[in-house]
Amino acid sequence: MRSLFIKWVGGIAFTFFIAFLGFLLAKTPGFNNVGQLASAIVIAVIYRNIWGYPELLREGITFSSKKLLRFAIILYGLKLNIGMVISDGLGLLVRDAGVIIFAILFTVWLARIFKADKNISLLVGIGTGVCGAAAIAAIAPIIKSKDEETAIGVGIIALVGTIFAIVYTILRPILPLTDIEYGIWTGISLHEIAHVALAAAPGGQDTLAIGLLAKLGRVFLLVPLCFIFIYLMRNKNSEENNTKIEFPWFLIGFIFMSVIGSYVLGSKISVSEGFMSSVANMTTWCLTAAMVGLGLNVSLRDLRTKAFKPLIAMGITSVLLSVITYFIV
Image (cartoon, rainbow, N blue to C red; front, side, top):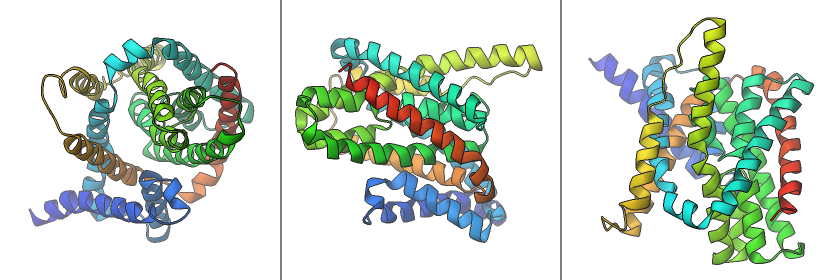
């Protein structure tokens, strides 16, 4: 009984401890622009490659990387205001759909040319087009990607997205865009919600609001995208070996929480900003702990061969995406 407690509770606690170290690291100069999630992954990867994988805690770590990850995605649904997207963002939604299609197809095409890892390239293409780490985490179990591939994909997204967000803030004063146009540009081209917030905030509240609305359209499209990949994977597996694809039930939770956040909380049930902030913080911590579990499976020896080419493919895609969307805002 004691051994089981150590394996499960100890493993979960270990992932949250690394997540806390990532939180502290994210407060330091340089890493403050990278964020808690990416900082925690860096620490997890370093730990794994210096001290090895903590086998005694495997059960708890696996729980974090699998179950907590799904729980975090379900909570992430509260960030999506469906009503706002439908009523105010239909025009943006068309551009968002184009961004997603271009980012995925072009990244995968470049990956074939560069002979890059297929799964990692697909994941970073999805993360670039949709909503960064959350999109990667949602799609990963559908395409049966390995924990290491998922962690590498999230790390690449965090790195490139942060660089682009900083470059956007530097370019903003010299670009011939209105605050609203600049906000739309950030929302339809940057990788994570946090990256959009970082780049759009200097433009003021209106810029930030329209940027987040444009970004929420891409989050909204994550659900149909997941079902498309479920269909594609089932067809692929039926042709190859009849392996069944397990339905990602956490997506139903994501949709349910989106509906609750959009039409119940605030209108039917009064909730404070403090409550919503607490839920957002819980989501971040659970997602960070889950990513720690994934990061502990990353071998730097494999990272050299697997990450570089997808990183280049995604970087090129991100540059082209920024240029193209600049001219359509």
